[in-house]
Length: 85
Image 1 (tube, one colour):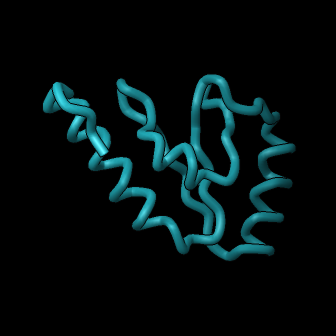
Image 2 (cartoon, rainbow, N blue to C red):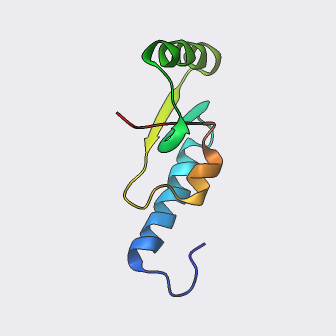
């Protein structure tokens, strides 16, 4: 829900977040990429990815826009990893 007085950009951001979380709500593993997420080495990521694929089948990596993620996406994500290079 968008608060009264929210900008069009904020309203679109919130709507996209709600739609994304519904679209992926039944997907087995949702990985949110965020600068404040957990940092993994390449070998650690490979091990995690292999486990997620073996246990859950599909993995979805979500990349936020300039406003970050809508609250619905934050709630839907199972894991948050850093997206730093």
